[in-house]
Image (cartoon, rainbow, N blue to C red; front, side, top):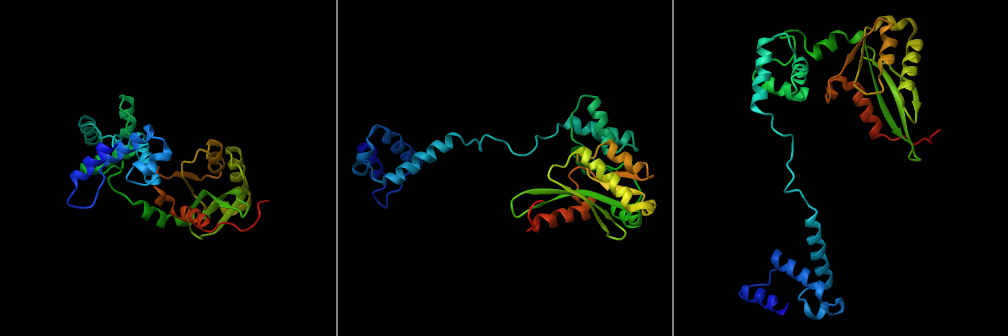
Length: 263
């Protein structure tokens, strides 16, 4: 211990003493060989500093940040060429159709990755090369669109309540069909039946139901609205802008927790 301390002092005779990581490692390792009651007499630092060095040394043994790669693995060049080839030879195929064909060939790749490859190659990822954009479609069909989504409210007692809301795009009229602690698929189907009953003849003016891809929206849920001659529009994965009005409602519920007791 004294020999190592003298080596540190000889290395830095011209200025203040600075302990390198290797010095801290040796001090922490040697502390296990010396009774703790003698640390203050032997070591050039306080016992608290020595323990802090030891904790930092142990923490680095479990830190795999340097060994862990970040982000997705790169897509092989052969897969990129195959995606571009399929798009050019089949101009009516969209990025999701191409993803499905790749899955049949044994290539597991996300639809968003196919979209990025086509976009980088200057190819429109959509199956139609012309037509209205999503914003233009929503604006033109606002009177006939109803959007739905779940949002939650945390009560003053810490209980989380879930509600299913339906929002008419044309009038911004909001319908909250029910509130529950445990939303299930059967519960969602019952709320679909409730909203069709509550709207009555007004539902005839609605043509589309916009929803996300939540697993609670099962086939029976969609069947309720198809029976009313409504078409189901699914928003794309990880695309909150496609159902922005309901997502804004969910964000507002997160920002303003309920002050009422759970009942």
